[in-house]
Length: 117
Image 1 (tube, rainbow, N blue to C red):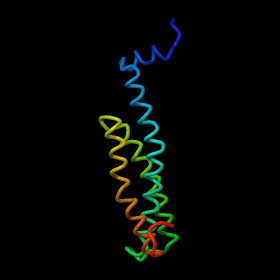
Image 2 (tube, helix red, strand yellow):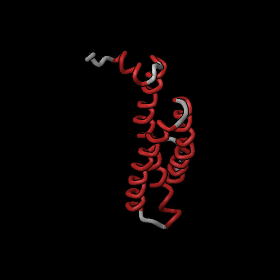
Image 3 (spheres, one colour):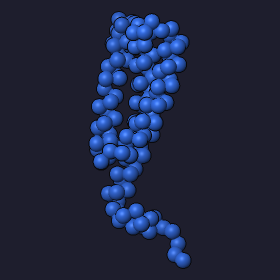
Image 4 (spheres, rainbow, N blue to C red):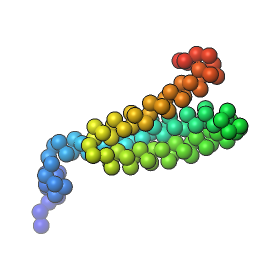
């Protein structure tokens, strides 16, 4: 019986070597950090957008946004590993984050009259 090593693991995965391991590392970091950022943006965007859109109370909008943010984090993690390449995964996260960030900034501007805090 041979010892389990990192080299043996890479050969077992498919022999992609460092490039494959680098792609997996980028996907893991994108799933954790990018998923968290996307979930937080989704949560904030819904907390800002739901009260005027549905005549919902602020507390209910925040709770709804937080629940949707958890689902958004999970969906982002699934997307990152389902994409064809690590670059497409990161690009997809950024593309999904842009309208959410715009909604958050628009809501902040509407509430305070300033774009940045």
